[in-house]
Image (cartoon, rainbow, N blue to C red):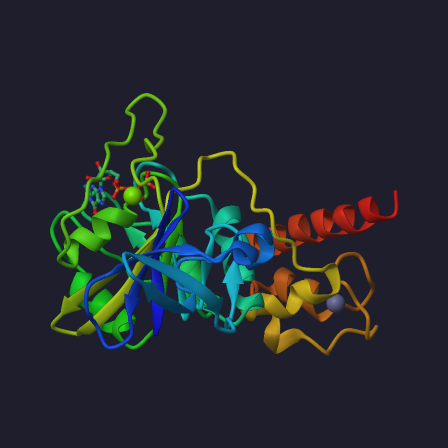
Length: 294
Ligand SMILES: Nc1nc2c(ncn2[C@@H]2O[C@H](COP(=O)(O)OP(=O)(O)OP(=O)(O)O)[C@@H](O)[C@H]2O)c(=O)[nH]1
Ligand SMILES: [Mg+2]
Ligand SMILES: [Zn+2]
């Protein structure tokens, strides 16, 4: 039988059989458990067998993509959730996530929450960069129907972003009833309310939504995946109109003369903050590559 991993907890994988039916709790075949890179992720498609009272996940089907943080697979849309109020959104975190998503062929959508409290100036920046930027309030419901429309045709979606940004609240606004947590007044940080990754199905007027909720990042965490330096620029969609127009074919768009990207930054065609994120990611990719030879 085949199904989709909806949750993984304490060594068990919870699979929803294709065609519906109750979730089946499986253990994984020994070889799957041992090889770290092969361990099942939420969103994975898998074969399983029911043997008497127990069920066994026997094989993972090929993935269309996967992420390390959050640990999910087969993602159509990565919804980067950013608060317009507290906790303050971190543009560098947003940019890192857009690059991760673009590099594995998932569509990044940047969703700004807490619209009832404030409007994020970042929405315009990201819209201009070519992203969908739904602005919503889970409190008043503003923008939620439009978000549902956007996500209904978007494959399996995964929510990511800071703790307290309002990921779980979005699912509740779409019709679920999950626990959420306050943001600390003093530090403006979330409380890490969501503790595990789980694929939820929401039956909405707009269609059936399949959305993975994930534990939020803390404010200082770094993403572990690195896109190689020479592939970074192609994962900034706002750079696309300018690529291939630099003097040097292998231009890294930093200090080279006659660079179309830095020219676009100077003329406002590329947002300075996006370019700054590019330079930071470039430096860390180079550092990581150099560390390999030490
Ligand atoms: N006013 C307002 N508050 C919101 C909104 N969305 C979320 N909140 C509040 O923000 C706090 C954090 O929301 P959660 O949904 O738990 O945040 P999360 O991103 O799931 O956080 P983690 O599970 O820790 O990663 C809660 O107190 C919510 O009530 C919103 O649109 N408006
Ligand atoms: Mg949560
Ligand atoms: Zn260049």
